[in-house]
Length: 481
Ligand code: NAD
Image 1 (tube, protein in one colour):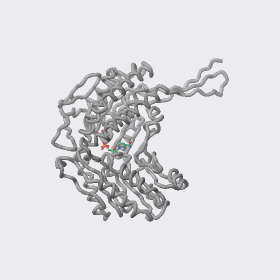
Image 2 (tube, rainbow, N blue to C red):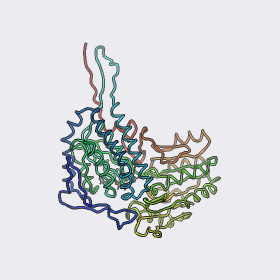
Image 3 (cartoon, rainbow, N blue to C red):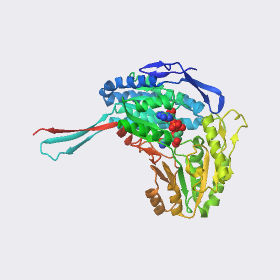
């Protein structure tokens, strides 16, 4: 099937007619679609269309915008099962995980629509008698939204919704591994009757389409989720034009397990957050830091859970699907080799799976390394796959120090019954999202979501800051004396 870009209310091919192919990671023989390999010129047209649509979209008022967006949410709910099937066939995650993603997108969108309707500036008492002082929030203009393949439906939802409800227009580029999920997202807005140009969709490479979306002078805001390396490049480029950026980047998230932890609950939470979506959540647990006293007991419980994980095609009755494509497969297998060479102990997994109908897919065993040392690459770098590194610490202070001894700062957890330790951890852990006795991946749309250190930059997504990023403040003083 040949798919197209959606620009200015019409489906169109890339201007030079080139396409790229996408395949199901559970079975690389299955082509999921051919997509426009768009040029910079295509992206430019989309940006110009969004720019032309901006004034009217900003002027119609938030209640009418909310009507369009609420209708899109209703369409989404009605199509949830169909969308989940698209996510699974394209990304590989299990059907249950795909359903959860669609449900999360719905909740994010409902919350952001409500925020938009309630959007307000400030009125403050002026220091000059007879002067009325207030501020209003205004949309910024055209927003470039660039999303990754791991949450190809929810991430566009939590970026596009606050952008659109607050009166901006959007050019959206999906990751090249998951354009069909991106199209499914755009389709619901088309069915909701969104005016032409308000939401444009362009598939293609980061170096072409993405580059235009970063450098085009008509773009006023860039919201990007992806790898830290690409994010740093975007920041450098955006700085030249003083364009605002929201960068949600990689992670190396630790779970600290103290000697007084409920080890069953801790092992459940670590196993869930390390292997759900084949370890390809930005908030996946990739390091378990266990206090020596309970390391053996925790490892035994963890390995028991890991060995019970059923891997296979996400459309079947399984717990974990394939990783998302050949590049991911090679990169993760590369890290497993690095872990072996670095001298860590391979306690579980470590192999590509090719039996039981998995020979044409990108399946990897859930993998655990123990005896991991803090400076090893598998303890420092984001692997973004079903690979967990277990480190041992002598006590709380060392565990906290190890948790922070990485360049990333996205998410963390501590498992303990000691409230004093829990609060010390909450205070000193260097992340944007942290937990006590819960998995590193837990979050809710009502609160902001973003990382610190190399995990993020700018005003975070979601929660009340979702709309903050896409609006600017205009302050007025009126002398009525
Ligand atoms: P990626 O950086 O390779 O690509 C992300 C998007 O950027 C894609 O759409 C890609 O085409 C585009 N892109 C690539 N080069 C570009 C350029 N030069 N200019 C503009 N756009 C460009 O990341 P990925 O492999 O798709 O996603 C995985 C990464 O995303 C992981 O590091 C993961 O941790 C991170 N992630 C972070 C969060 C978060 O909220 N912090 C959420 C999900 C994923």
